[in-house]
Length: 71
Image (cartoon, rainbow, N blue to C red; front, side, top):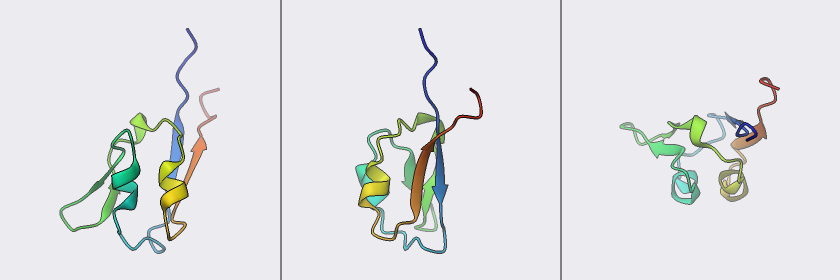
């Protein structure tokens, strides 16, 4: 069985307005709103690379790429 792909999530904090859209659209609960009402990447290992967060982010603050460092 092949290894599961892993992904890197880049978050540009200065562009993010913490709208919570990424939290709402992520099917794997990679994001949460923290106690300061800010978007946080809490489960990056669960990312499946679907790009839902990237496609819905109005601020272009997220980028998801396949992590090839283990290859």
